[in-house]
Length: 316
Ligand code: NAD
Ligand code: AKB
Image (cartoon, rainbow, N blue to C red; front, side, top):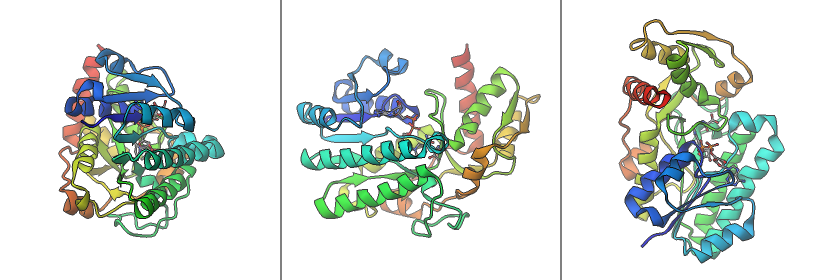
């Protein structure tokens, strides 16, 4: 039986991924860990949880060896907007965490390792529409640089040591269960919460800023489908492009107005505008579709219905 370790399980993706993996592998076979205290949703789920700092090589190695871990999901990271406020710290955490886990997984013969990349790996010299899998990659944020360097390290460990590493270049992820951790795409979550709370939202990106986005339900399914695919189907050992929808703040506001007609939005772009402007507007994910049959289910309007319904219940 597989035993799974999730590092950074208390974050936006980690909470939902932990629950989804526990449904498949059994609650006690999926150990959630984070540097911060257990997320209330995970606490309520009553599965195994440990406080773990990904930078503590010895402690992480001990947990992986003592718990007979066969699969690792490394989700701990500093995201794009937070990373720009302390670039060297962000680089240190994003790169050292990955290098620690690559080495520990290799030494402990871990069967599968997942580490996510991002559309942030691309930069302003990348073709922005339908960005191909293989193209010019010159990221300008410290987060993006760490993602691209990380992709290369993953490929290196696969080629050199045969470590079964899998990765996705997630677009901006939208969800309601667990709060996002300081990204440039976070406006597309806050807009739904503020629409329900105040019927008004001030957006930190300009109205026509198109970015690739994805609903969390699709992202979790993509992650698990990638990890469950037979190894010989995984032709890309850097990170797969992954796509479902692209929209601007103006378009998401219009989608919300179909349900809350008196919702209003204004725009006050800040430093995150420059980050967003350096990223693609849409992504070509043909390789993911061909190699392991990836297919998204949510478009903007379907996601809006689900977000509004669930946030309304959450707000009470
Ligand atoms: P998040 O910020 O919500 O969660 C990260 C978690 O890591 C947090 O719970 C945090 O407490 C934990 N953490 C931070 N430092 C740690 C440390 N030293 N030791 C252990 N845990 C630590 O991030 P997320 O949105 O869940 O992203 C997870 C991964 O997915 C990251 O690699 C991120 O770059 C990538 N990603 C996310 C998105 C997105 O839109 N959410 C898009 C592209 C890629
Ligand atoms: C961010 O905005 O930093 C993340 C990402 C796209 O990687 N959501």
